[in-house]
Image (cartoon, one colour):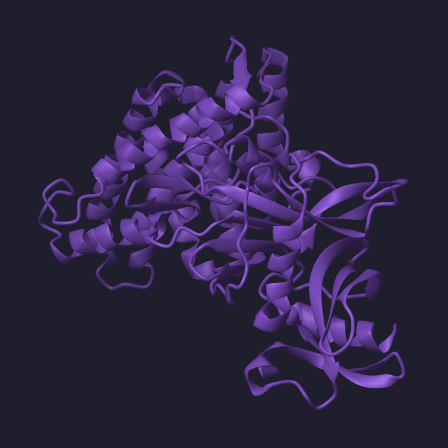
Length: 469
């Protein structure tokens, strides 16, 4: 490995967005390095390949370069190390934290030509395409001169807020192709239920014997008055736990009205996606295949997490019921990773974010149509989590468990009612499909908690038990 690759091999595993934690790193290779700014400071886009246990993952690093010993104190936390580049020792660092350099990204975006998401010009100015392209959606004007700030708390990506106007989401793990977040958000550009998209940055990433335009980052409207849906729900639960003798409807922070409005907003987004992008139906045979894949995930999860075994019969029964559904199931593009952390409440109403889907899955898989009830199931599971997570490790858990179940059920019912009222598929009339998706999500959660937060394992297990009852 080169000096830079050795530094990256030490630095990348310590980043929150690194998806390969817990597995030894075998190789680190800078597959492509595209300079954006020369001199001091310099700025380059790296596509880094990390090999682990026979598989290779790609990551984006926005690399800042300054002469060794000149990195400002406020950037010390972003340092990757010192190595010789171009014959001189240079400090290399994670440039997303450097407002001087990230301002240049906004400048390039502002000057870019308008282009529809997914479209590609064969040449630019009569010559070949540049390795890193800055694209702006038609009619989307972008102002400059804003100072950037890195948003805290994200795990799989890194987002920069420019003033109070824009947020630039940098996709850390790269899969070849158009990122679904850009594709779906652009399709919903006129919807009041998404943050307006403005622009994106792309490069070419190899996919076998071909190269595909691959989304590096996406610029959207910054929802400055927004409150995270998970935070609002958790506040409602705390209000109820402070008055455990009251019903959720009588507690001060009843969330059911918001849950119903969120259901209606979700249905509106699903309807818009069905209008703008292709739809299809799953035949009974395809439903049986879907059921089989759920059964296989259950088998694998039960082998890894023995605590799941007592619920195996109930789970298998739900998946087998899905296989017996004898009418075609409409499918379309959906959110794909839907929960309370993916929505915000603004002064005007609910807004859906992060249409990326599951970042650990290849883009091709995330772009496959699915039943909108998959998103409904994801949100129903999120209500269960919001109700139960505050009881983890609490001595009051047995006393408050009935209140948790009541809060979750009230908001699940309200969301489902809002979704049906908003024109979505009525969840009450498609229980076999909804139950299978919800159990499948719960099995995924069991695996996730067993690997990452063992103390939370009871949350999906107790939810499965409650659903079974």
